[in-house]
Amino acid sequence: MPGRVGVNACCDTVNRGVAAWKGRIYLGTLDGRLIALDAATGVPSWEAMTVPAGARYTITGAPRVVKGMC
Image 1 (cartoon, one colour):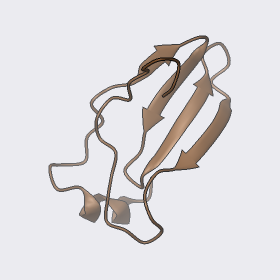
Image 2 (cartoon, helix red, strand yellow):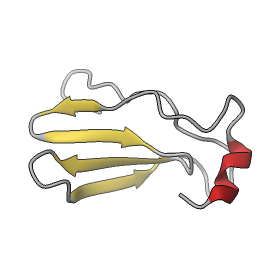
Image 3 (cartoon, helix red, strand yellow):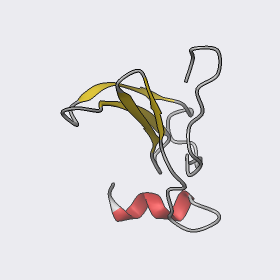
Image 4 (tube, one colour):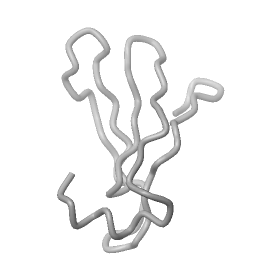
């Protein structure tokens, strides 16, 4: 992440964990993306922007898988 996105984090530039489910590792980023990595290779499977463009939001908490959805 570019250092400039750290200004959006209210409570420090941290990552409080990841989720593992069905061969993928899920993580949130300081620029608001949710990313899924293949657990065996580390190659990104997909990513999604979870906040409006230009918004000052972050994802610092660990993702959760509930009823088959992350």
